[in-house]
Amino acid sequence: QVRLVASGGGLVQAGGSLRLSCAVSGSIFDSDVMAWYRQAPGKQHELVAMTISGTYGEYADSVKGRFTISRDSAKRTVDLQMNSLKPEDTGVYYCNVHGDNRPLWPWGQGTQVTVSS
Image (cartoon, rainbow, N blue to C red; front, side):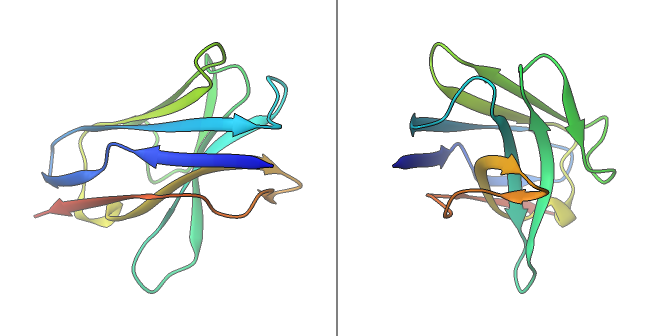
């Protein structure tokens, strides 16, 4: 059983920042790849960023240089710092374990991010 609860979203103007946090519980291990995904209105889920250790991340081209993923294994949290936000960053953000090029667990609670122009 895995529980993934994202928080920290909100309404922000273009150019602003938000920090998302995901609380993880259940059978998730330090060796698992943790990732943030987002789903824009009317679109499929998109992989935004992923990390194993929290000190090195891989990012979608659309967010490189603006977003930073981090992980605190002791607190069992995965954060996403989002800077220089753009209206196209709007969507519901979720965290999940990433494997076999896909999210491995059912979607948990997401958090809405809305960026106004």
